[in-house]
View 1 (cartoon, helix red, strand yellow):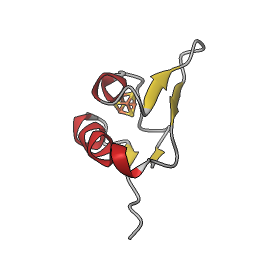
View 2 (cartoon, rainbow, N blue to C red):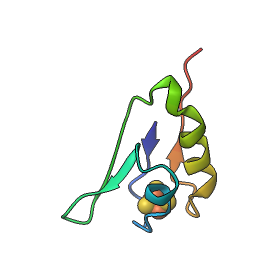
View 3 (tube, protein in one colour):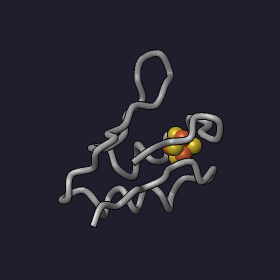
Length: 62
Ligand code: SF4
């Protein structure tokens, strides 16, 4: 998973949608898991759908 920092506006919706994958750091930046565990894929997809800036990309491995 990756987040385009040029698009991300730090709204934090992804954090609310998938708190196990995203969090806001104390300096106001967005932290997230690059490698999404298989058990968290649905949460990651929900975060992708929730982002108003379309900043989140999920690169699924098959
Ligand atoms: S929902 Fe999108 S714009 Fe908002 S913090 Fe997450 S990645 Fe950034």
